[in-house]
Amino acid sequence: MMIMNLRTHKNSGKMKGVSELVGNVLMLLVVTGLISEAFLFGMPILQKRMDQASVSYTENSLIEVADAFEAIAREGGDTKIRLESQSRFGTPPEIKITHDAVGYYLELRGATKITHYAPYDVPLNDFLESVKDGEEIVGTLGINKAIVVTGRSTKLSGGIRNVMTVRPRPIRSPSSPVITLIEITPARGKSTKTTLPTVVYVKKEGERLESRLENNETLTYKIISLEVGFE
Image (cartoon, rainbow, N blue to C red; front, side, top):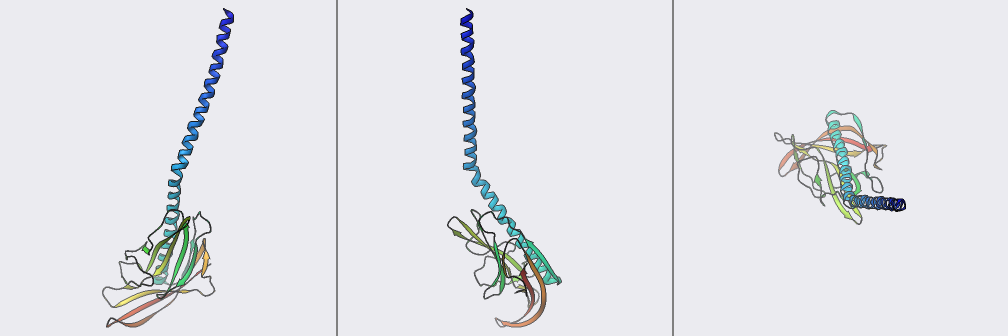
């Protein structure tokens, strides 16, 4: 009788050990499955959120640059604005001072995996409608921004190229035929092309008045010149 009880005790001990082993294996499989599911479904969402945060951060930085341009144009003097970057893909964003038929402007090129704009310029800090290349839209004093930040995108293999610009816009007074235009010129002795992080240098160079005949109307242009470069 004693032998039978001892054997039963031994068998129950073995069964308990097997049960714990099976339980541990099942728990490992469940945890592995949950982690795999999190990576499969959660990572794209996380990546999208990080992309959105990175692009939003760059937008806000360029809006700060635009606000600084307007402040220096009104008040004079000079200032420096540091531009950071939260880009996680390849090379950091490139910024440069470029020009077209309208005049000089800042252009920033970066890349993301998901976040993108339309294939044409979308205003980010103004109520003006989207604009075509080389098109000059006159805003209204007290309503529109004299410096407009825009964004556009191009889809590439493996990612998306985002192009943001900081461009002056003519602003007309509703009560008089006066149009104020902030004119950007490359600063002497400063770089006109660099990558982020960088420092944008802005200085008021001067202002002048010009009379122009447009659509049988004589308009007075108040042109404020700003020197812009990178350090």
